[in-house]
Image 1 (cartoon, rainbow, N blue to C red):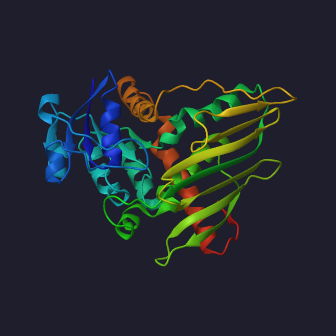
Image 2 (image 1 turned 180 degrees about the vertical axis):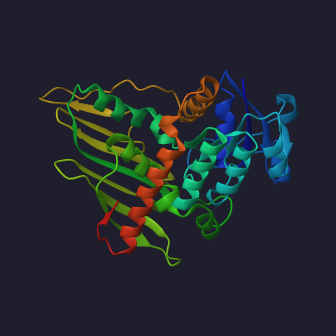
Length: 345
C-alpha cells in the first residue's frame, strides 16, 4: 500500500484525491492547504474547467491528516509519495525537498516553468534514487490513447497528418486571471503543454517548430497555433489557448489521418471518437477504455504507484520525458515571440 500526501487542494488536488479513492494499492493519508475551510474538508468551493465542484469530506473519518504547514507534510514519516498539486511556480523546491527526505514524487504538469529547474529536479531524483513522475495525464485519456494504440497496431497504416486542439474560456472562479497567469505561465504553457507532450508521445521531437499566436497586454501568449516540422510527409499542427466564451469552458479534440482511415474527436460535439475506414465503409465508434474523466487520473496515479511498488522505471510519465515536453513547449513560445519564425530544437 503506497501512502500518499497531497500538497495543494485546488482543482487538481481534489481531482487526484477522488482518483486515489478508486485505487486498491494506494491511500491518501494526508493533505496540505492553508485554507481553513479546506482543512476542515469543505472543498465545495473548488471548481475547474470540467467535472463537478469539489464536494465535502470527513477527513478524520477517512484517516486523512490535514496540515497547514507544507514542511510538516513533507517531513511526515508515514508518507511514501508526495503528490505535488501546488501552482506551477511552486513545483520545484517542495519536490526537491520531498525527494531529499526519501519520498517519491508525482508532480503536476508542467514539471516546472523553466527548463533548468526541471532538469535540476530530475538530477535530484536520480541522486536520491527516488522516482519522479509528472502528471502528463493526456497519455491516459482513452480518446487520446486510442491514437497511440492504432498507430502501434498498424491496421490502418502510419499517420500522415494530425491536428490537435485544446481551448478553454478564462476561469471565472478563484483568483484573478493575472495572478493565475503568473503562477502557471499562462495558457501557452499550463494548457498547451498537454498537446506538446502528446505530440512527442506519438512522433518524438520535431526538427523545428513554427508558431504564431496572440499576445495579451502583459506579454503572455493567450492563444497559439503551431506547426511541428518533422520533414518528409508527416504534417502535424495544433492550436491551443484561452479564447472561448464562458459558455464553452473546455474543448479538446483532434483530426488524425492514417493511410487507411481518418479518426476524429471533438469533446464538445461527440462523446466518443469516430473512425472513418478506407473505401465507402460507414464510420464506426472504436471501443475506448474508461467511463468518465476521472479514469484518466486514476490511470495516471495508478501507474506512478505501480512503478513504486514494483521498483520499475516510470518511463511513460518520467521526469525526463516531461523535460523534453517542456523544452518543446518553450520553443513554441519562443517562435511566437519571434513573429512566427521557425525555431530549431
